[in-house]
Image (cartoon, rainbow, N blue to C red; front, side):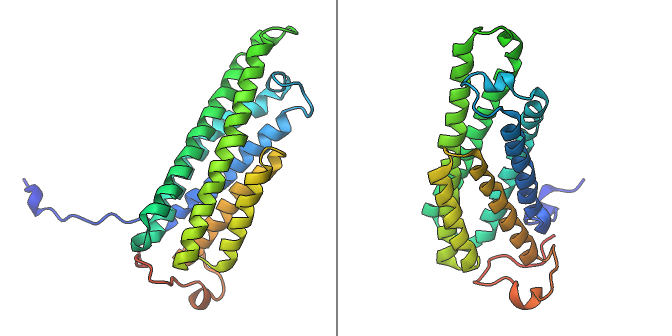
Length: 238
């Protein structure tokens, strides 16, 4: 029997393809947003939209959200791994904290939506439990649009600031990140379609990480997209 001290231990490393988690989150979360937006009737009275909307699409959105959240956790891990020794405690705390708060509130709002769907059979008659349904939908909107999406904007701003100071990402991505975060901060309560900008941004970041890691090959990668700025990780990760 081999003694534990004689075993060969390996240092844990992030797989290069782990950035596909960000792509998966972008696709799943974007699909959830589109499903909810197209399922809810426009101009409906507060409390009646989730009862009058397409139950099939709303249930599919509720089903997909947990998997989108799991992928987002992996995305946070991949981005933080890319910072390596350049990570700053202050900005990293804001970056991780805002990301986790976004995820927690998105889960909470989705759970409220699932509750509204489950209680739909009790809302068949006009005037039945309308106060409870209105409260549930107002809570859902506040959690998702007012708070969760603004945490997503803080997540983007903190990450863009880290990239700007460390030069880990190109300047055009930093500028785009600030602009998208500002639009989400200002207009997330105005139109739900503005929120689709967040998963699109995650998709762009994830694809850029995959290109730089060598998982996706593009012409001129060796000259233009090789790891720079003192990256603390070698390109030959498993």
